[in-house]
Length: 567
Image 1 (cartoon, helix red, strand yellow):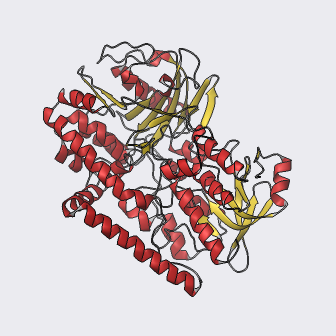
Image 2 (cartoon, rainbow, N blue to C red):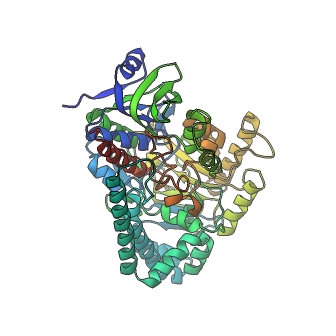
Image 3 (cartoon, one colour):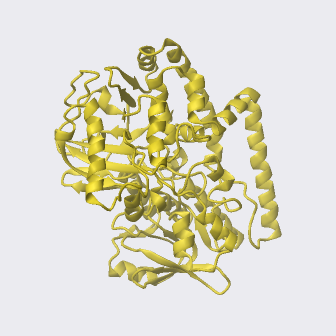
């Protein structure tokens, strides 16, 4: 019964936006915005999604930047997308197809050794034993502990925070909120008791400690520790020695693929297929998605409520509620008119840590890299090509040194590189015999002290530094390159809309999570502006291609609609 509706931002689509007052407008067609739209439309609301770019997806997007080569231009692996989102929106039916990776990790060493890890426990034991038998025995216990911690976290990810209710609400709503908060904390207490005191203390130790401390307490071998430590610093400007980096490590192992915990997968057609599947679910439910529709300002009435948006081309679109999938900075400091929000709220939003040290390079290559450490020579793809290839991180000290360079204002002299080659398993994204290579690189400051990312020579110099480092492990890699696309932190901000280039819409430190995300007092997706909600990665539970912020925000919006008898 629902009319499928997707448009590319032509004149007719802009006219259709103006023809009615929408129940809900979603600013930004990234995966969280699309997720929120799908849930709202499924509940019977009229929903329009406004995407600034010419294609949907935000950071979860596929782009054919070089003819025949389709790049997951920003995000490049899938695991964190919540099982509830996948099942409730029936994403496999809407085109989502995942390729599990086995092995999932390969760390080559300059001394001729290497480490493979993955879901095969026998392989893990054999590989880790090459470096330390004691570590091989400890590794399964480490995985079990992290899995137990993830189970504890699951209910927190799939629900709104127990925030104090804001604004003028009815007595019934306030009583309901108190009951829900009491139930939330009672459930947490019950889980804590079930976990036991020792494991709860271990859990707190992981959350509060530097990743280096956590991993040093578990393992001896440098290669294993460095391989695991990259999960603790990915997307951040933190070092493995930064307190709280242990949580980021946990955040990146709490996902799953088809019920297998901690397994990251490639998506057929690239990460844009995740967004496309969610978009298909949303349009099937009746959502109206418009690209090339940049929002320039929120419309605020005399009572201080959000009533719609003004597009960059002058189009005014009216709505009962607005959900922003943009970053907190973009939403409150660029889209909301000045002097509308409380001064202390604006100050807190400004003080969110939006720093980034991440650069993404997408490469088209003639052939697969051949790593000298293993001498396996798999021209069509071997176990070393299946998973994430860790370049330049053979010890936690190397990772820390690379971070210190960025702290001192310069791109890492020996960057930390995570290389993935999805075309080994996904034959839809490159011509036969050729491949797509993703490089996720740290650490690159937003504003280097020794140059500028606007300088083509400076960009090329850093790119060649990365390629030369890969050549040390896989001789001849540079000569295989057909072409590449580079996104530095300023590029991520300009192209994708990520403030500061931060892939999480703001740091994922312990001071920026749960009841403090995006800021203290406003963690439940509502904002000081009545009718305006947050639904992006800058809100609870944070970044990554999770869909949880979008789903949770939609549920809060629906609660408020029911409260005011709008549905």
